[in-house]
Length: 208
Length: 208
DNA sequence: ACCTGAACACCGTTCAAGT
DNA sequence: ACCTGAACACCGTTCAAGT
Image (cartoon, rainbow over all chains, first blue to last red; front, side, top):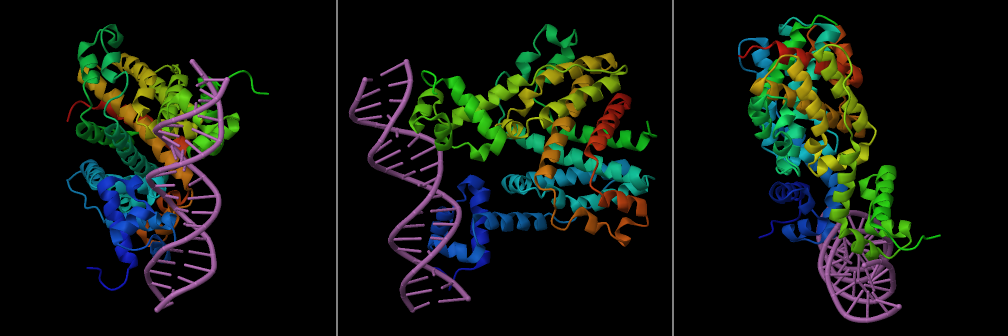
């Protein structure tokens, strides 16, 4: 079954498979060796150590996140589409993205999207420092939102529960609000609405 | 030196100290036992196991994040002040906050701030589902921003570096923008500007 | 009720030795 | 150039035994 000798690429592929299926904590050198049918120490020859194996894995993921194609007519719509596209891509690889984040490469992964945002913000008429601020605001908001979402999905049940705290009098005579906050957030809708509000705010503001 | 018998509270305090000083990875049961001058297994009697020790530590941190007092005259200013206050609190305990996040209690930690936001959004005239959406948008943005910041600070040097990618022609004849994106972000300023833009967008938007 | 040491099953990593 | 097993220094956890 084993084809000739072990390859760095084979090691990376097996490691990625382990992470995809069982999360990063399942990626131990010994399990990986068992999966590959080799001695643990062979892996060290090809990838150095566990740390650089993870580095390589993360590098791979960053490369996979290709260019983003904005859609829509207005700059606002196109910016929103960039943010939504990015969100879709990231949500498809939760474990690997978590690793990218933990290793501090989230920003680099975002660079193609940043270039698209620069283009759109320009089209909307912003220039210079104002434009840079707008790009970064959208970037931070999108990445940040994803991190919060990841957090929520990992632990869907919060101890006291948001719902319990918005029971009766707390909501100051606004039962509709209390009900809305008791329900789990519609994250897709909230994301789109937030980005749109932010972009509108950024394009409208004079200085303040 | 050792005063009578070991206490659950002593264990938690020593564990918190280890995390504060050297990060969560330094908190091993054996190091903790050494710090306390007891056998490793004594700790198990008081806190169960490492997992529930971390739970208790995180619970403690969540409790410490007290109520937030908004300042400023307009609703927008007061909402921005809530977000900034929260940011200050979180930045004072980076390691413990990271643990809160990893254990999925970020949202619960945010509840006092959420109540303050409800009050302010109401004062701004929003009601029902619209108000709930605004509260959550600010909440997600603030928490998300902090997570991104934490990420940036952990790895200040990005491999290609944002600067390298905004060299010459890339920035589409806007040298001021290129320069701005090449510089590291002024996170304090960016945070305030983002929250303000978001809130303005939320309060202004009709429906769409 | 509280503490202990010994033991178990796991880690990542190094190293001398093989081919 | 590539692979190996043995060994080291670490983990978290269990358990029978002490007081």
